[in-house]
Structure formats: C-alpha cells, structure tokens
Image (cartoon, rainbow, N blue to C red):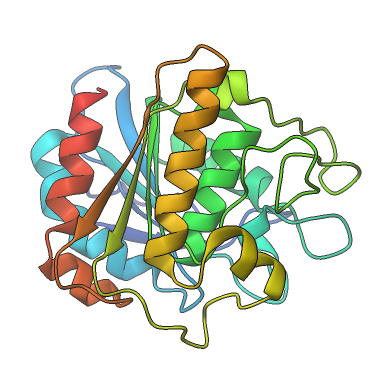
Length: 273
C-alpha cells in the first residue's frame, strides 16, 4: 500500500493507498477509489475503526466487495490524544470534532482523487460503531445507510436525557441538534457477535449504562434497536433499524469476518443503492 502525502504522480486506481494527515484538522486516512468512466459520481463507504485503530485492516477486508461493485472506501484514523473523544463525536473540551474531521476526509478525497461521491454510507466497528450511530443522529441528511458492529454502548433516542446517553446536546457539540424525525429515516443495521457477551476491558461498565442498556453488547444492541423502533412507530415513521447476530463471533474483528460480516454489510448497502 503506497503512502502518499500530496498529489504528484498519477495515482493507480487498482489498489488502496494511505494518505497522510494534512494541515489543519484533517486526519490521515486509507482509501480505495475505483476507476471511473467520465465524470460519473460513485458511492463511498466511510469506515470507522475501534479503539485498536486498525483502519487499514477494514479496507483490506472490504476491498474485493467494493472493487466488484465500483464503490470507494475511505477509512480515517482518529489518533489520540487529538481525537480521544471520537466515539462521542468530540464534545467541547474533550477532543477535536471527529464528525467534522470525517467530513474533511471525504472532501479531501474528492479533490485528491478527482472524483465525486454521490452516496455516502457509514460503517463502524466497536468504538467506530459508537461514532457511526451518533454521526447519523447528528447529520442524517449526509448518510444513505449505516452499519454499526458491536458498539459498547449507545445514545438512546430520548430528548430529556443528556448527551451522550440521550439527545439533549446542551453545549456539548456546537451547532448540532438530534431530531428523531430526521435520523430515524436513515436505514441502519446493527451487527453483533452472538457470543459478544463478555464484560471485557473495552466495555463501558458504569452503573448508569448497565441499568439503562444491559450488561453486555448483545443485550445493549437489542435494547437500542427495540427503543429506536418504538420511537419510530410512536412518531409515525416506518422502523428502519434492524439487528443481526453474527453466529459464533465474539468481540474480535477477525471473528466477525469469519461469521459473514462483509457479505452482510454489502448486501445491506446494496439494498439502499
């Protein structure tokens, strides 16, 4: 995989590349952009890593399916300490705004690869799944569909609960309002390993989260999907959030790949292209 800092020699459109972090607030990222004919825009899947920070591995596992479909892949790397709060989008005083950084990566990639992305899909694993569902809540107009895998905990669609437990933002994220009538329109699939029930070191284990959401990732996924569907029905929206268990998988990215993660992700995105 070539490491490129700035445009120079013509880029190959056959293999992924690593793009170094730029000036200002843009993080580095891994990218695959397929060959295009003329000026036709293409869809893009933006992939968000967990706390182990392995964006390259996601791109490599997704590459064959993306290449077969003519879909671009972008995977930013939210490095600490700059993005310590990336799972919660970057609250005031806790880190840089990861949602704005992701937008900056997409904008940069369009210029860098001289292409246009017409449909944006989101994928996130573990801590990245936390980012993804909160990004959808904050910016539903920018996303066609999203897949979140094995989030440790969730923001529930409750207006009276303070963020990130609920939707009452206050001054946590400037310029953001989370409106269920908007974000419940975005199709989302929640994937979690059927054996992802360990209370490991990466799981948030506060009394408040345990009481509200359950004791493990499987229970928390079920509770969140059920609550999202209840709220959708209450306000007159067709529920567009579903849950799928990955058989035999625990909380390990390699396990989820073996359990059929990639095919489930791309089949879901195919439904919404």
